[in-house]
Length: 292
Image (cartoon, rainbow, N blue to C red):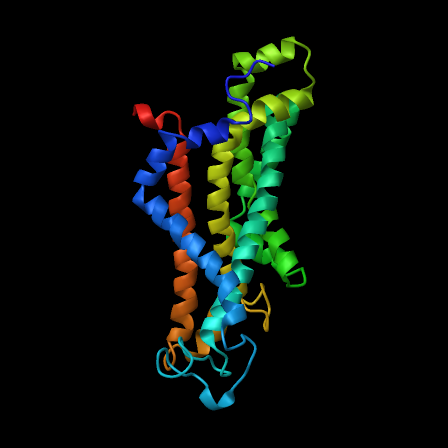
């Protein structure tokens, strides 16, 4: 098949000058470093930390940070906050990555089919996307979460099923543009099947915007899980997440503000880091960036 950019497009675009553009973006590099540090800490530290996230010591309840053997203090039940933050990070980051993966799969499939077939099929699918986008995301999440049993898997599916629409619109626009390119028309003229044109010609050339959308989707999923759990419809105790840690801290804001500040900081750092990473990837993978 005739194709200017085959499945190695993503790797080639990350080479110079794309890689140089990414490395020159301090915010993107800082975001990537923060994400890597956060993931490694959440995986590696809990097994070696002397305190378990579920261990309760009522004699040292609401211990402030740096005031005792517990580095970041203890919560209202005497549980180690650092251990809970790291275990909650496992849950929140896992929800972010898995919800992103599922939403990318759904959005890419819908956008690919709509952009390739266009006509009635494309119009019907994109009107479905528009219908979902008519509802504010927060209200849609809360409305659906009220009818499902809270849990990690259900929250992942819920977030993915309410956040794939933007990905579908991005992929639809990309596929419609590529559909008229010479390499796509040549493949069709040579008798290639629809599936082969979609998955071997068009989709590999759409990897860059999908990768950028994926990094931003992780930030969205982490934030969505946080406010669902904060409102009591998400991850349920004793399983920790940054969102339900904020929820539990509401009654102690005056006397123990660190219970809310610390998980709030983790959410902020994670969301901002993924947004910075997405911006850096967009600049690095945009072939026009070097000519502007």
